[in-house]
Picture (cartoon, rainbow, N blue to C red):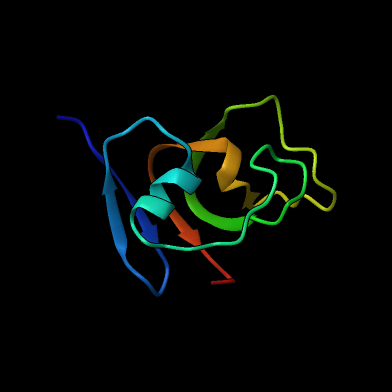
Length: 89
């Protein structure tokens, strides 16, 4: 079985095998972040990616003030191992 990891700075490391959104993986592992639209419009779920890549399930999130090192877990999937930083709980 293939697996990858999501390391959350100052929290824990999650091992995942499912091809689902990052938000879904976090929720299944009791890591709670705020979210609303689940489609990349509102930006509520934005977190920082430190290392690794994600693939978006939509063309590109359109929330205002989208910074280069930010990702929207509601509409992306990890592409292999990643390291993220969650600034809100």
